[in-house]
Image 1 (cartoon, rainbow, N blue to C red):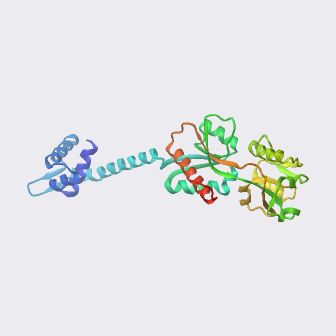
Image 2 (image 1 turned 90 degrees about the vertical axis):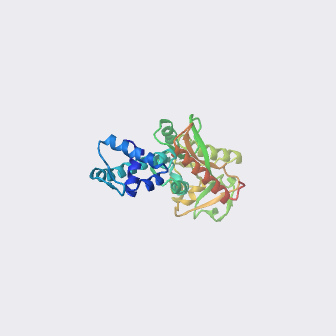
Image 3 (image 1 turned 135 degrees about the horizontal axis):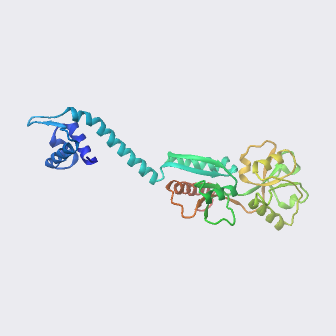
Length: 303
């Protein structure tokens, strides 16, 4: 008994006419007759009563019909599910993400990906950049939304967004009404910074810009997370250079000013293992590339 024989049986059971059933199957009538005889031989049961005037299912044939339909449907579903997994349209995808991505990049990216891959289940884990790099290398996550991590082998970082730095200032501060400031304005202003150990990228960009401007402000407090830094600004402890995503946090009592000579922008990336073959992970990376294209056009930059 094979699937070809079962399909032939079901079609004949529906039409109860060898000529019409053979036409639906795209085969000659004698070929269909042989398939049915072979199936009956394999099963050891007569499936059809045949006369010159009519074809009718036997009790054995009637019993087989419902099960044959279920078998064929199960095989169809198995094929669909297998193809969907192979095309990255099914299965599960484990995603790591940095906290700041939840204020724009993550939901936008998930919308893009899920629109074309609604059957892929998502396992989301908030992690620092260093934690994501380690999890990718260990195979604990499939993709990461993070910033580039230096000195990590075996991981590919594809930029999907650039974020400029803004100056977060308490709303009641003297120069908070300005639209644009220079780093030289911060020479005597207390500042909240990012530690070099846990936020090496932010620390290096900010320190480099301050050095170029010849400014050494007093660092009164350090914090790793962007939302924590902005909260300290809201408390009046000082000002802070933060990526522009911070303006989306909605923290009260804080204004964000453009810095004319601010640090170089920082990147948001999709991280994948080098040589990644998972169709879902690769599709997620492609969604990131589309998001980058959308962001570039919205920013008015050349394609």
